[in-house]
Image (cartoon, rainbow, N blue to C red; front, side, top):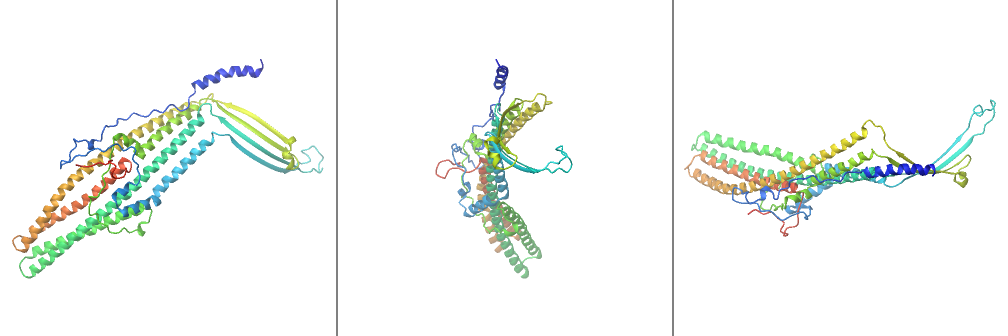
Length: 494
C-alpha cells in the first residue's frame, strides 16, 4: 500500500463523519401565530349605534391587489396616483434598493460556478554588469519576457456555505422587493388620502363661504334696521362680529388647504411652488366603494410588509448556515495554464513554452479564539430578532384592520345621525329667519339657529372626508385592492 492510499484511508472516515455532522442552514420553522377566526368588527355582535352590523365577506386570498383606486370612480384620482407611481422620490429610492438587492444576489450566485480568468504581461529589462559578475563597463544587452496565463478556481460546497449564502441573498432580495410593494401601496394610499383631505377642505371652505354670505346679509339687514331706529347698536355690532369671525375662519382654512396641497405636490414628485390643485369639493360620500375584508388568515398573504418580514426571517435562518459552515473545512480547486518566452510574443503560444498546474487546498480553523462560535450565536440572535419583528408586523396589521373597520362603522352611524340633525338645523334656521323678519323673535335667536346650522354643515363635510380617508386606510391595512365589482367579494353594511 502506497502513501497516498494510506492517507486516503485515514482521511476518508474523518471526512465522512464531518459530512454527516455538518449541516447548512437549519430547516426553517414558521413562527406560530394565533390568527383569529374572524375580525372582531365583522362579527354580528358588533352593532353600531344605528343598529347596523358588519357582515363578513368571502375569503379574498385569490383576489388581485391591482388598481384599487379605480373603485372610487374618480378620474382625477387616477391621474394623480399614476403620476405619483412614476415620479415619487421615496418610490424611486425603494426601486433602486431592489436593483441593489438583485445584484447582490447575483454576486452570491456567481460562487456556484468556476471562476475563470486570463492574464498577459510583457516586460523589457537590462541587468547591470556587476550583478552579472562582469567587469565594470561590460556591455549587457537588454532582455524581453512575455507571459500569458489562463486560471480557474472553484470552491466545492461541502458544508453549504455557498448554498446558504445564495439562499440568504435571495431571501434578502425578496424581502426588499416586498418592501418596495409596501412603499408603493403606502404612496398610493397617501396620495388618495391627501387628495380626499384636500377635497374635504374645499367642501368645508364652500360651507364657510355660504356662512360668510349669510353673515353679510345679516349685517345689511341690521344696518338698515339700525338706521331706521328699529334696533339698537348691540345687534348691529354682534352681526359685524359674527361676519368678521366667519371670514377669519375661512382665511385660516385656506392655510390648511395650502399645506395639504404642498403635501400632495411632494407625493407627486413636484416642487410645491409649481403645483396647484383645482378646487373640487367632496360633495357626496355615497359612492365610496365597499371594501371586501375576507378572512383574517388572508391578511398574512396580502400585506407586503408581512411578506417582507417573512423573507427577512428566511434570510436570517440561511445566515445561520453560513456561520456554521465556517466551523468546517473549505475545499478549493485551482488550475492554471501558462506560456512564457524570453524574446517574442509568438513564442508565448508555442507548445514547448507551456506550463500548467493543478491543485486542491483544504483549510479549516483550529484556534480562532471563539470567533466562529460567536458568529453562530450572533446569527441565531438575528433570527430571533427577525421572528419578533414578524410577529409584531402581524399584530400591527390586525390592529390596523380592526381600527379602520371600527372607524367606518362608527362614521357610518355618525353620518346617519348628522343627516337627521342637518334636516332639523335647516328647518330651525328657516323658521328663525321668518320669525325674525316678522319681528317675533330677537336677533340672538336667529344667530343661534344659524350658528347651529353652520356647525352641523361643517361637521357633515368633515365626516364625509373622514369616511373617504378611512376607506383608503382600510384598503391599505388589508394589503391592497380586490376583485372587480359583481364577484360577491364585498363587505356590506345592513
